[in-house]
Every structure is written in C-alpha cells, then in structure tokens.
Image (cartoon, rainbow, N blue to C red; front, side, top):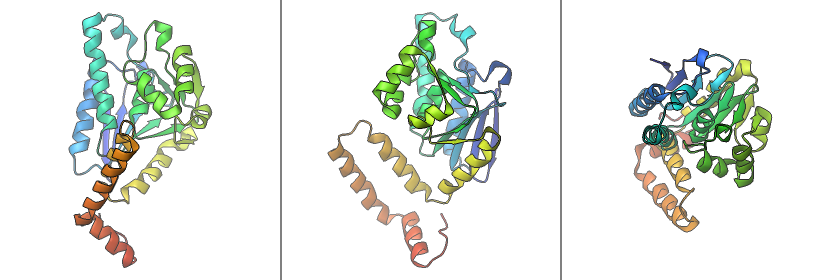
Length: 254
C-alpha cells in the first residue's frame, strides 16, 4: 500500500507515502486513495478528512510520468476517468476534505488540492499546472476547477504558461485558504479542523452540498433549495440540540 492512514479524534488523515517519487500518482495510488476516501466517508469515526504527502518536499508532484508515457488513447481515457472519479468523490464528499499542501503541488497534485473543500499550505508550497510543457492539458479537473476558484484570467495564465506560483502568490489569488510555516503546518491544520469538528456534522454536510450546487444552479434555484434545506433542519435532532445548547449556555453534544 502506498498510503499511511491515521484516524484520531474524528480526523482521518490520508498520507501518500511515495516520498522518493515525490508522491507522484499512478493508477494504483489513485485506486488506493479512492478506496480509502470512500471508507472514511462511510466511517462513523471520521468527521473531517485530510489529504497530504509524505516528507517535506512534495505534497503531490503530479501524475507518474513513466506510467503516462506508455498510455495510448484508450488507456489514457481510462486513466483520466479514474482521476476524475477521485476528484469528484473528494469534491462531493459529505464530510469536509482538506488538503495539507506540504511542498510541490504540480499537475494532478494541484488538481487534488482544487477538488478539496479547503486548502491549507505550508510556506514552502509551490503550485503549477505544467501539463502544456509535456504537450498535454490538465485532465483531472484543472481546466474546470481552477477558473472557478481563482478566476478565468489567473487560470489562463497558470495553465497555458505552465508557470509555478509560490504559497504567498497562491494565497493572494485565492488558491489556498491559509499559509503556515512548514514546521507548524500539520499542527495548525489540526487546530483548524477542530473548529469544524465542534459544529453539527449534518449542518456541515448540507452546507458543503449547497455550496457545490452554487457552481451550476442559477441564483433563484439555489436560494429555493437553500430555503428548503434550512426549513427541513428544524425537524432534525442535531438542530434541536444546537439551539437548546445555545439557549442554555452549554456546549452542544453533536
């Protein structure tokens, strides 16, 4: 197995353990991440999911180029579909998925980060979609998610030039939510996750779903759906507990 897995205090951490290969993604690793992610989504012991890479040099340096060099159009189609299935599973997870970006996030690594709900970076993080340098394009959602997150202009610049940007620039353009010193990245990320873990898991899940819907629903339809979900929660035990805890000045027991 190419992953290290930890479940502790409702936090599930997936670490890609291919440090010598800069945590590059081949077909087998993609399948392992997808299987583990689905397992964590179903687990009652996990409420927040982290994805990170081993070592302090790379988060994920991209897809495995050696494996890609042997692809033909048919096998390339299977490879890109597997990658997109993983990215879609991350994005549509009912539990928050947070990327802990501890170094290079190139190509597929950047695309995994883009699919996550929140991106936390070390100050050594470097981002790029360099596929055009290989005569390719981003195939795991880079052309679709990057412009939604940073805007069309910045996405055009990054994708058609293949340029690299550092953590500071990534934060400036909205690619990452927070930047921490690399030495404290994981401890700060755990602190960040605790803010989520204190909240109602059903409310968090519904919020993530509605936010995802906002990418393709017209505002009027999105608002109607939001209102419907909001109203339905008042028949939910989690909501009743949260309201009662607030009124009685105690911590909610979610």
